[in-house]
Image 1 (cartoon, rainbow over the protein chains, first blue to last red):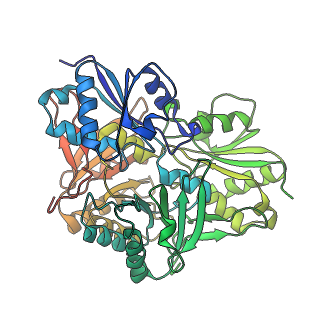
Image 2 (cartoon, each protein chain N blue to C red):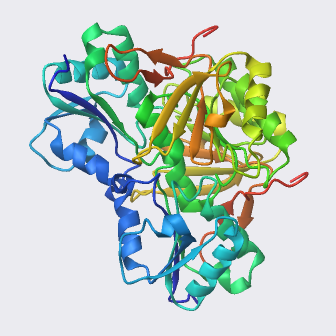
Image 3 (cartoon, rainbow over the protein chains, first blue to last red):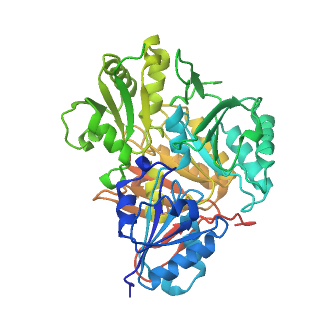
Amino acid sequence: MTPAGRLMVVGLGPGPERWLTAEAQALLAEATDIVGYGPYVDRVPPSAARRHASDNRVELDRARHALELAEAGARVAVVSGGDPGVFAMAAAVFEAVEAGPPAWRGLDILVAPGITAMLAAAARLGAPLGHDFCAISLSDNLKPWAVVEKRLVAAAAADLVIALYNPASKARPDQIGRAFEALRSAVGERLVILAKAVGRPDETIIRTSLAAVDPREVDMRTLVIIGSAATRVIERPEGEAWVYTPRRWEEGA
Amino acid sequence: MTPAGRLMVVGLGPGPERWLTAEAQALLAEATDIVGYGPYVDRVPPSAARRHASDNRVELDRARHALELAEAGARVAVVSGGDPGVFAMAAAVFEAVEAGPPAWRGLDILVAPGITAMLAAAARLGAPLGHDFCAISLSDNLKPWAVVEKRLVAAAAADLVIALYNPASKARPDQIGRAFEALRSAVGERLVILAKAVGRPDETIIRTSLAAVDPREVDMRTLVIIGSAATRVIERPEGEAWVYTPRRWEEGA
């Protein structure tokens, strides 16, 4: 028996409404309940839906609450910044389903993709993700630092462009410096981009390098992109330089 | 001197209009010229814009043509499926700019991000990209096979989820089988998802494994996702199973 409720896990994109998909807009409009981290709930356009805002550190509680509402017949939108499947709420929802009552496996759950931060930052810069790349979260609430470091070094050794999510927080201000240090040891010099609050009024883009980067410039709203050996800068007579990674691999690039 | 023209590199998402962003819709509406691979140009909603459709193998020619039109004052939309910055037209445009006349560096170029195939496929399945992951293109028109294989093995050894773009074409039907073989040798068994034409009427999802996958099921419209050791399946009494990768790393997972 499928309950009448529905759980929609909706990606809001990195901030501005222009990056919402048509699907996300439609799902938010049909929701009876909006569940999410406060600042994301605040981004949902005005509607009659009940709003359940919570703190950032309680993903599983929030997921369970949303599942309970859906089980009771609500049409619940769980909202995430960016894409809900990339270091965001979708995995938390399925973790809660797997550990939860069997009835939750009968729920109608829909994940609506969104523009994730690395795509917005890349578009703003040019095309730094134009060739093979990876996305790694620096949060060691969720895994040991040794695992983070091993993955970073493997990715750099394979010459992938690296997008770092959750690069810093008040609880762990020093990790990003250790990450840069590990990468310097592994591959020497690389282009580094610090893309803060992309698409927002306080957007800041810093173009630097592994040798020169100041870890104190990185905060929790920053997406860090580390170029591959092939990543290039196009200087311009006026305006910001463009950054891109060519589609073609070149020997020794 | 900035010309009045503009070059907009626009991501159309993986197919259905519901995955277009508001920004992409607005930019397509203001374009005087649409440039792209034929099937993508055909997806642009009707408008008065001139349409310049081309074959799939001429990215650089297409980029140069678009830049020439913009230099002459047109408002040109170069369209890509998915996100233009992920194995698509944005890198080709910047390659053309770097190799082209100095005036092109003065152009107004805007990249509008889109939902890339792996995000749509992941949303359709649950949350398989819920933890660290990479995106690798199998096309060896653009790099030697040894480089592809090295990257695959490094990514698997670092236990990243892997999204494979351009996994097969008529010119290279056997590579995907070699890729699966390399991954089997490196890490043994893993979950494999073949997501074909996600969001389209002929969408097909095959859930299999490195041991069981049939490479002949993979075509150029397939996005392949290879799970990490932690990727999990939630079976359901009715309906398709969900696939997700937990946010937390677990010893020996």
